[in-house]
Length: 124
Image (cartoon, rainbow, N blue to C red):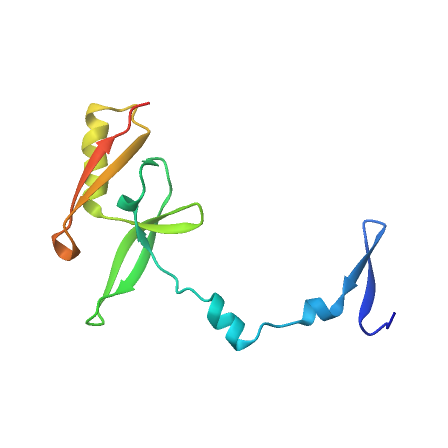
């Protein structure tokens, strides 16, 4: 065993063997490129249903013209989903009639700026 490759470390009174070659091994540019997926924000309407007690965060983006805009999004199972203002308004309207509501589904119609969302209560 070469001491420059292997190294011992004490951790809670146990010896742990660390392979320094594995720690220092870096991925190649090709490997990184093959594994790369650009960050993206999905649409909350893409989910079958979701709880309404999820935490909303503020995000920023740019239009194709380069203008900045802000949006609301939620992180569910490690993925970011954009939540349109009309969806938030639809949930508010449902809560006025169904204060015990915990989960909703969203029906998406249209595309781009002409997209319409209908919020549907999920009753279990």
